[in-house]
Length: 73
Image 1 (cartoon, rainbow, N blue to C red):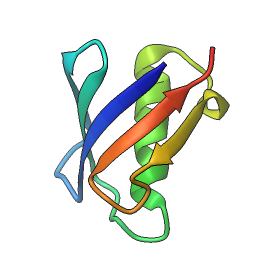
Image 2 (spheres, rainbow, N blue to C red; image 1 turned 90 degrees about the horizontal axis):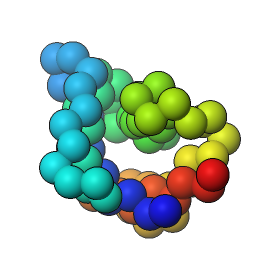
Image 3 (tube, rainbow, N blue to C red; image 1 turned 90 degrees about the vertical axis):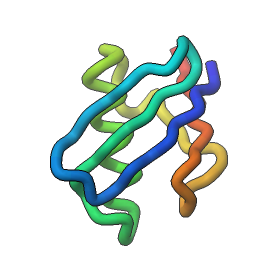
């Protein structure tokens, strides 16, 4: 499964909003430096979906706000 995530780093609080089954908006408080925001996105998605963190891989957009994340089950 490939998920499209629109990431908003530096937000006031962590939040996930599902737009449809394959698209999500993720707001994280972490700064977009040294992969901190990417780690926070994976942590939030893992917790929300109930899937282990190691199943998530950012396959496109590691340095941009729009990311494609592959989820292995």
